[in-house]
Image 1 (cartoon, helix red, strand yellow):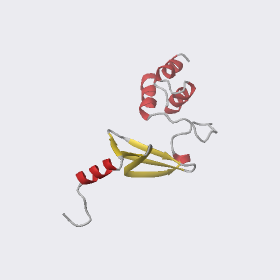
Image 2 (cartoon, rainbow, N blue to C red):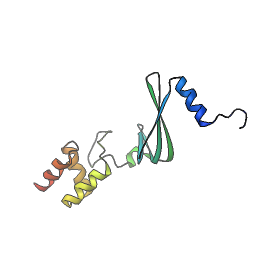
Image 3 (cartoon, rainbow, N blue to C red):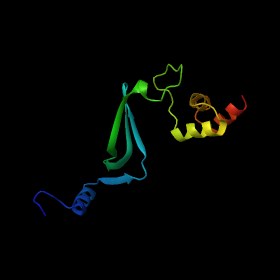
Amino acid sequence: MMPGHMNPRQVKQAMKRLGIKTEEIQDVTEVVIKTKAKQYVIKDASVTIMEMQGQKTFQIVGEEEVMPLEAAPTKTAGADAPTAPKFPEGDVKLVMDQTGVSREKAIEALTATDGQLAEAILKIMSS
């Protein structure tokens, strides 16, 4: 072994002695970090949580895509709020598939029902 390098087992033992716990989050598909002006989207990310003295630190590894917040599909037409609700893409697609409406209409229904899928579908079908 090269001087100055520890094997992973030694590192894990040393961290345990120091009271540091690590855990990898499984099956992460996407991590989104929003600032006032930008949105960072990390796809197929590897996320590790490190806990020490009651504080959690998240380590994220993956390919990032940075876009202006205005370009991010988080605002519905006519929404003035800078933090318009964002619904999982699967929820939007499900409402669209079940009702045959446009993406915008599906998002409007989800917004009106606080993201409740069944209520959003019923709302569209009863209108």
